[in-house]
Image (cartoon, rainbow, N blue to C red; front, side):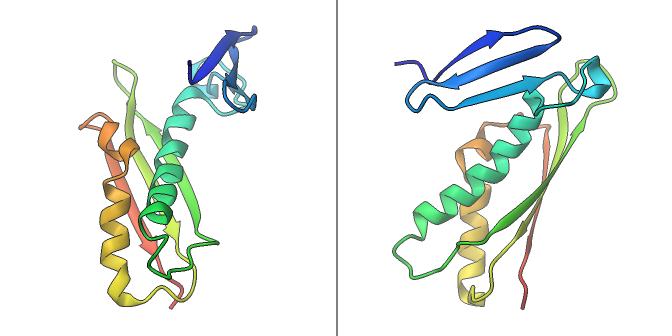
Length: 136
């Protein structure tokens, strides 16, 4: 079974359908590359996938540890190269952690996040600038 089906609409836009659920997502070319920037660009989805993968992987691997991870919030910045070939040069992820994460669990969470499948799949020259912000 295919993971998704992608159809080109027009005006540099695509519609992706998740095969299993039927959920849809539209992408648009970014403003700095002839698009209108009205939807996620393909590279925006990659940068965002890094944050969602980190959060999901931390939740999976600590599910039985009694840690409450609900409420983690991520801010994501994507920076493209300024020279050819055009690609993601740097992704900044700021993970705002919920209250109550014990100091003793923080290193484990950070290791899990940095070893998520998306982090391990990105080009080695794409800088992953990840920080964890704890409220206490």
